[in-house]
Image: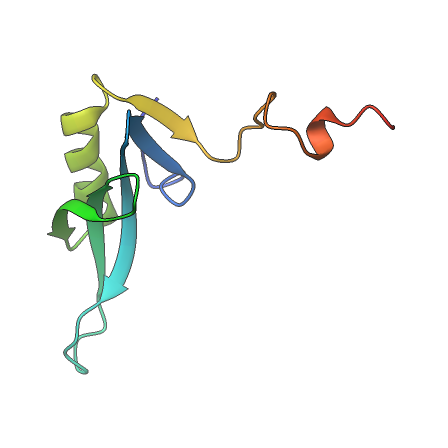
Length: 93
């Protein structure tokens, strides 16, 4: 699976202590109302290791997919973690 326009808000790639994901922001120019998409890699302490800026979500997704999809694990943050505890592991119900 790859990161795309539909899942970029809850998906990322992970390898050991690194995480690659897309976030968005806006230009500091008050007259520029375009979103900026950031393909970012952080370490386990949430420090930026790499960050690339893109004007479209497709370009940001393409960058991460080309660089990491064949090497790192794809993570869907919506998927349940069977061994993580919490409500999904409760035997009271």
